[in-house]
Length: 144
Length: 144
DNA sequence: TAAAGTTGCTTGCACACACAATTATAATAA
DNA sequence: TTATTATAATTGTGTGTGCAAGCAACTTTA
Image 1 (tube, rainbow over the protein chains, first blue to last red):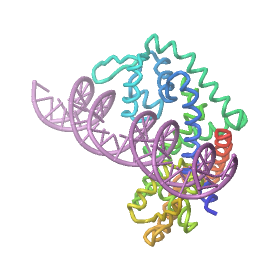
Image 2: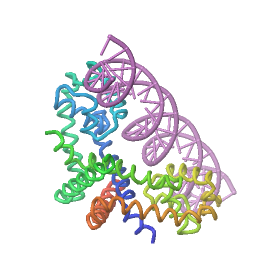
Image 3: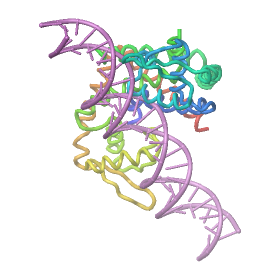
Image 4: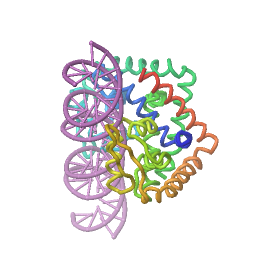
């Protein structure tokens, strides 16, 4: 049958997993009014105190244009600020942003328990690691 | 460091993998003028000769509304037709659609070689299976 | 057989992400 | 110093997907 064909396709399964887990993550982070990716961006900014958009893009593996849009929204929320320096725009978190960090980590932990409760902690963490490694390899080739 | 945190998050890694593999798949299927998901849908239609949108949604694990949009485009391309029967709309492939099937399978095979060349055939196929299983489990819980 | 509920599909709206083109600044070569 | 090239960020536009609400047809119950 066709289903067998589909489930042997990495594109198909990876897209599906991404939809499911995105759904879970959005639900979780919605409790603090952020999209999961925004939350991750905020963590990246928090860590370094001052960081360029390019660095953010590299950490999150997103395109610069995507980062620009995310940043717009987070500035509008008042959780980060943008200091332009030459051609770079350096992002740092505001007090309001820093105040969110604990909540973000709580959501993060919750999300992880949510899926590890279902997958099993060992299996879930292993899967995550394998997916990470596969991404690294595929992305490396893609970009040459 | 933060990267460690990120790479331990299934949401983060799964989204990233999905972006990378979607990119590869889109490139591959672009050679025949289809998006990967449209190609999959066409295969599902081809298999059954006449299939409801609901069934398609179940096979592809997409929302009904998404299937509606995909079908609109494929009808516009002339590769499927829509026969309304009561409240159901039954989809079947046209001659033009059937003529595409071989090319779709070729793309499919190419895509698979592309990533398996990088990941290793065994690893790639195992990963795909594990992702499939994780999706099943998580989706099952999500939907109750 | 009429009212109420259910089901399949569609529509309007929204979100995340990307690509390509553009702007603005910096670095290098002439 | 000027011209060229490279880099960082932004903007316009498009694609894929989803949710919530609505419509249309069928089913059940009274």
